[in-house]
Length: 356
Ligand SMILES: [Zn+2]
Image (tube, rainbow, N blue to C red; front, side):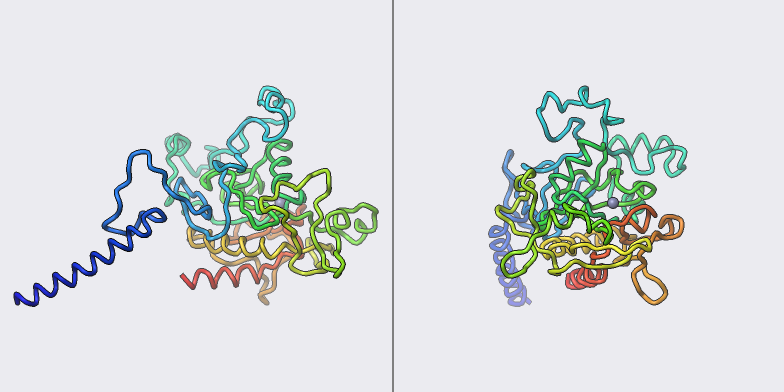
């Protein structure tokens, strides 16, 4: 007995010492999961890895590059002034003729007439009372958009400064994800689905009819050029500088070299696909969203043969839970366009979820 106890305790000493060493080695990276951790000093900086999103105030790893609204170079949808232009000209007092309200977001299901919350609950929620469980119960759609702006910088300028709108995420051509507000907020990007959804604007100049592409100076001819090897690349128009793209000298190329042709809302359209960097980040974000929100399964609208539905859903998608395109919930919309690879995104996201 005595010797057993001794050997037990020496074994446990080894294990504990090993754990302590492991904890100290990773202390500056991750402070959780170790029973014996380095004590934090008052005022000590906590490390982030730049791959986290914020959900109800908590950080969740998505393993793709994320710039938060609080980060240097971020886009902050909480601010009331314009993001671009001279500061004095941008102040709310000076722009209120062009934008209806100083806020570009509000409380999910916050109208009493909707009958989701009673007045007491609304008071609690608007006072910071959202918690993850409440959010998980109410959020059941994720909406993919393309931005028809080309880069996320231009997208934020159009949404925030010019239109008084918002979206939770923007995905730039280099795969950088910008989060502009906490997912607990009701962003203004999807009309009838704003209360229940999370949205992302993917940088892409959009999809067009053959007729539209006959015109000189059309969007696809402006934004896409070919190098000597006839490889297509994104050519940001000179007036936009580098388009705010975070990766220096980034050359974006569509996943497929040629335009993709397909139908949306019954009309034939042409579009260049997203970049592989965008798909990589989008797949990771998609997997993470489905992991965090139990009502957002890795499913998208399909018909009885399992084929993608390419038009608006009955009742503007009110009966659908999962991932949708803007065109699934609004009959006048065509984004994210015919090039968007639904099956690829969902299948790769499933692999990531299963690998955990
Ligand atoms: Zn849209």
